[in-house]
Structures are given as structure tokens and as C-alpha cells.
Image (cartoon, rainbow, N blue to C red; front, top):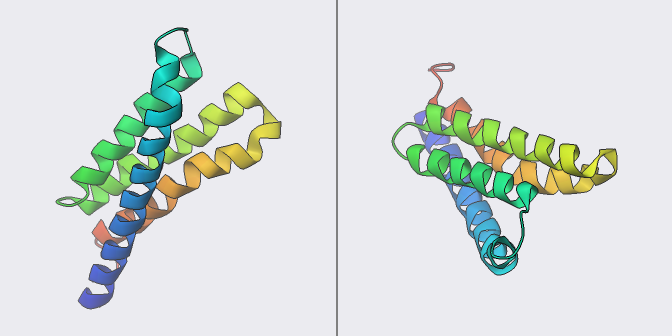
Length: 117
């Protein structure tokens, strides 16, 4: 049981790292140049939620349950943020922004919990 938890933790950390790398490069290329000239509140809120996801990811190396909780809630809030700014027509975008953080967050949360020992 211990080996399966380590494998799941490794998979979750790899998935979370890839999501952070992808969205980090996306925001650096597309988002940060837009911050200079305008008051883009959606971009600022997404960058803030992305920062919380990154903090949760790095925190999950030592405390996977708490880091997974932060990543999960940040992923949920990213999806809700996309619904708020784009409406129900942005369901695809909400899933694209939330699932890459939600899935590894739930996996880390599960690995860090005391269930199944």
C-alpha cells in the first residue's frame, strides 16, 4: 500500500508540475504583456489563483494533504472565475483551467490523508 501511495504522489507531482509549467509559460507569453497597458481584472485574478496553485504544489512536497487542498481549491476557483467572467458558454475554458490543478490536487489530498493505512 505504501508503494502505491508513493507512485500516486509521484504521478500527481509530475502532472501538477507540467500544468504549472504550461500555464506559467502561457501567462508569461500572453498574460504578463497585457498587464502593462490595461486594467484586466480577470487576468489579475487568474494570476493570483495561479500563484496559490504554485504555492500549494511546492508545499505538497512536504505536506501532500495540505498542498493538495490548496491546489484543489485554487483549481475550483479558477473554473468558477472563468464561469464568472465568461458565462456558461465558457464551460470548456473553465475545465481547461481547472482540471490540470484539480486532478493532481485531489490525488495529493488523497495520498496525504490518513485513510487506507
